[in-house]
Structure formats: structure tokens, C-alpha cells
Length: 121
Figure (tube, rainbow, N blue to C red):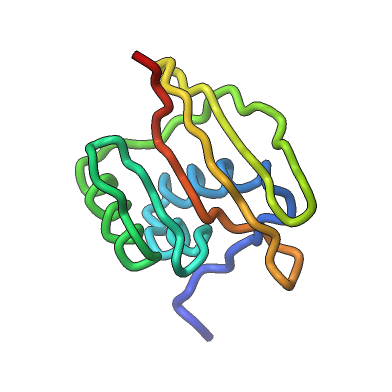
């Protein structure tokens, strides 16, 4: 028996956001980070880039510790080109996220780039 929760893989790039939110709501920080490639990059909007899965896990741990819960938004259809996909969502507060996902050898999708907020002055 294992203590690690059973984790559904993202079989479509559109699954990533739903899985991220579901895992955050149950406090599965490791599962959240597992949706990213080992050398992924996150732009959390505070002027610095978060590099690598360990740093991404630490970021999600900090966010979750504040009690903030991610909310589902209006997800746009993914734009897929071969093994790459562009995903984006308009969140309830009007923020727009954008991400790049890559299909893995086993067919699952993982994010490689995540920008929490796309805003134009």
C-alpha cells in the first residue's frame, strides 16, 4: 500500500487546468507540481521566474498555505501543433492565463511554460 494518491494523467492538454485545481483543493501540492515537466518555468507575475519542478512545488505550497483556492474559469480550446499545445483561461477575476504544454512519451501532457497573468498596458 502507498501513501501517494492515485493521480489521473492529463490525456488532453485541456485536462491540465482541471487537474491542477482539483489537486490544489485537496492539498495535493506534489500532484500539482507533477503536472509540470522537471525543467518547466512559471511566470507568477511578481517579476521573477520560477524554474524547475521543485521551485514550482514550493510556489504552490506557499500559495496554498495562504488559504487561497484556485477557481475554474472560461478555458479556451487548446491550440495543438504536434506535441505542443497552447492553453489559456480567463479566470473569474478577469485575469488571463496562458501555458505551453508538451505531449510526453507515454501520451500524457505536462506544462513546460506557465504565465499566471497576461496583461497588456
